[in-house]
Length: 521
Figure: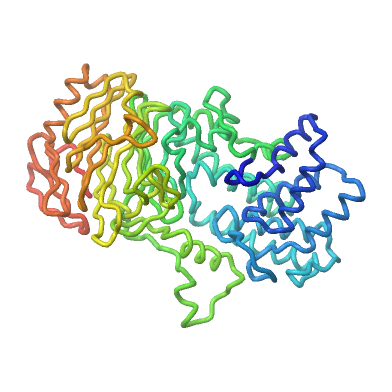
């Protein structure tokens, strides 16, 4: 597995070859290289430690390798408050779990030995790791995943959970099974005609190719008929795990659904049917009983906080990876806010990029994440988004990913994009003129320049609209307008409804209240 082209990680490949009986002459050399990478504490070496633990639990080593493994594990740095300095990321949802469970497992291997950087015996290290694993599970059980639906990081978390399931006491293992079930259920729920179509807590560029995302490895495991990806090799962990995929996931992947649920600090809405799929994070969220968790790093200068707790780890993560709250106008990171799709390949979305070109290495990137998060509201068949970009931000445009070649029919006008695929339609309106732009992906991008930009997306079914022309006519009759710097106005049945961006007050007469639906941004 390439880590940026300069070096690679081999542990998943070694595990896979061992499990399938395809061991090569080079595997011992790669195993020793893995130990060296752990010893040097490469970033993401916690991935390697988790793989090493799985190897040790399933296969025998000769004396030379046993001694080398012991040397490496006794001197590893299992948490940021332990001795040493390096560039390892400890605090994200997936990394923290892997460090926690690795501390437990390493401590169990050598209970009476002294771990030099932890300044603990193995038994003490096991206890410290156990406390944090339990707190990690407490948090996800109560609040859901922070890196929700991430087609990259949910795979890593899946592998970490498998180590918890297989190599911790039963009371912890049983809890991890339920959390893993929930992880797969969420991804299955958001699988549309074979690909994961979802808003995400953390996302990368492969979002533009949903059928190639890492989580497709997990979805293909559930249903071999859906597109497959390598998924960074995490299924090598599953090959020797006792975890059983829960029943009913295929049905979740295929059945229509109209639902709303909470995970982390996000309210997710999902509508999928035979014609189309719309899904998004609601921004701002409107539920009045919402209780946001407290970031302890904002309190530590005024009061004592428990820096050994997972709550503190989670707080550090928010400081490093950007806010986990979804509110209009807040600077973003790798949050993917919304998507609409007509099949596993024909997906559209807009974002405010963090760089000016597709080759940007920024986070947020060109196609993934948002420099500034939008207001988003989704109702049945409709999604609206408003982007308000501060003058001090260097990027003053948003852009749409619109793979026109994927549609059966595709029509472009100044403010409108229309597409048909199968028996579904998408119409997108933008308050600014949409200008085609070519970068690394040709004929798939439309930019809209300015500091205040609004989008409305309308989806439809061929059962309701016999022709593309009929669907286009219906969309245009709704005459969307972005007004007064804070309003989206849409006409329904010749009536117009308004909803202020930052307020709940709305004056409607009785005739207005008879309208089918309104969108609040």
